[in-house]
Length: 338
Length: 298
Image 1 (cartoon, rainbow over the protein chains, first blue to last red):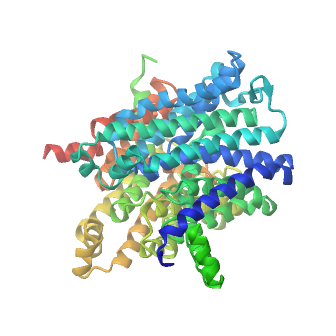
Image 2 (cartoon, rainbow over the protein chains, first blue to last red):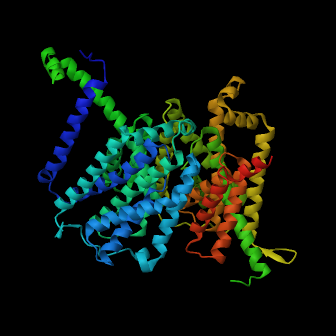
Image 3 (cartoon, rainbow over the protein chains, first blue to last red):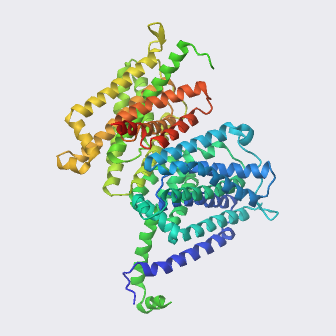
C-alpha cells in the first residue's frame, strides 16, 4: 500500500498521462485553431524550445553556463540556407548538415570547457560576437546586413510544406524527437556522469570520469540541436538577418532555460513558450510590452528554485492533493491498482 | 597602414586610454558586485546609460552646470538606482536563497526594464551632449591632446584613486572588503551585511554613472548605449580577473587600447571580434585573468 504522502509513486503515472495528453493536444491543435499566425508562432515556440533544451543539457545537466548559443543557432540557419539555395540540396540533408556544421563549430569550444562559471560565460559570449560579426560582414556568403533572402520552404520527400499546418507538424515533430531523446539522457550513464560533474567536478574526476571529454560532449550536443533549430527557423521564416543572431538572442535562450526552471526539460519548453509567446501576447500594450516583460521576468525569479516548471509542480501537487481529498476513497484506491 | 606618424600614434594611444578608462569604470562595478555577491550584474551597462541620461537632463534644466557637477549628478543618480535595485530585488532574491542563475537572470530582467523605461522617457533618438570641454587642444612637449580625452582620463583616474583610498583607509571601505571576502566572519566582527551590500551597489552604480557621462560626451547618449558597453565592461573585468579591483582597472584600459589599435591596424568591421579572440586566448593561457599571472608570480 502506497501512502498518499509518498510523492514519487503517483507522479510517475501523472507525468506519463501529462505527456500523452500534451502529445494529443499538439496533434489536434491545428484543427481547432487554424489561424496561420497562431500556427506560425507555435512553430517558432517549438524551434526556440529545441535550442532551449540544448542549453538545458549544457546548463541544467552539466552545469556549464553558455551565453553564446545564438552562435550555433545562426551557424545552423545560414548553413541550411546556403545548402538549399546555393547547392540545391534537399531540405532533410540541409537540416542534418546544419546540425553537423554547428556541432563541428562547437569543437572550437573544446579548449574553453576547462574554464568555469563566469569565465566560461565570457568566452562563449566572445564566440557569439565573433560569429555575429562574421555573418554581418561576409556579404558574399551570408548577404550581410541586407539579409539572406528567398530561402525555400521546407520540403519532405519532394513534397513542399506550403501550409503552415505542415510546417507546424515538422517543427513540433523535431522538437518532440529532441525532447524524447534528451529525456532518455537524464537517467542514462552519460546523464548521471554529467550530473556528477555538475555537482562536483573534482570528485567526478577522482571517480574516473573524463570530465573534459564529457563537458565537451555536452557542448557538441547543445550545438547540434541549436543547429537543427537554426535550420528549421531558416525555412520557417525564409529570411535571415544578422540581427536575429546577436548576443541578445543568446540571452533570450538563457532566459528561456532559467525562467522555465534550470534542470527541467519540460521547463525549457515552457520557458520558450513564455519568451517567444508573451511578447506576441502583449502586443496590445505597444511600447510598454518589453517593460512588462522585464518586470515579469524579475517577478518569476522571485518564485525561487524551479522556475515555471517548479511553480507548475507545486501547483500540480496542491491540485493533486486537493483532488485526492475530494475524491471518494474507493475511486482513489482503484486508481492505484491500475 | 605601415607608416604611422608620432602624432597619430599619440592620438590613438590617448583615444584608446580614454575609452579604456570608461571601460575600467564599468568593469570596476562588475568586479565589486562579483566579488561581494558572485552575481554577473548585467544591468551595469544600463546604470551607465541612466547616468548619462540623468546628467544630460540636468544640463537641459541648468545649462550653466560645470562639468564636475554634471558628473556628480550622473554618479549620484546611477548610484541611487543601483541601491534601489539591490534593496528592492536582489536582496529579496538572496534572502530567499534562490540559485545564483536566477539572480543573474533577474539582472537581465532589470536591464530590459531600464532600457525600455529609458526609451519611454528619453525617446529612441541619440542625444548629443552640449560642449563640456575647451575646444583648443592642449600641448604637452609638442604633442597635442584633445581636452576632452585629457579630462576624461584625469577624472577617471581620480575617481578610481579615490575608490582605492576609500577601500583601503576608511572603516566602511575595509568592512566592505571584509564582507566581500567572508560575509559570515565579517558579520561576526560587527559589519552590517545589508548596509555593506547596499554600499557596494551604490559605488558600482556611481562608477557606471561617471562612465556614462564620459562616454555620452564622447559620442552620444541613447537608450541602447549601455548594452554593448556593459558587455565590454564585463569582458574587461574578466580580462583582469573577475573580482579583483586592480585587475578590472587594468583590464579596462587594456581592452580599450586593444580595441582602438586593432581598428586601425587590422579591421574596423571586426574590431569587436579581435578583442574577443584576444580575450579567449588570454583566458586559455591564464584561466583566472591577469590577476592570476600576478598571483602566480608571488
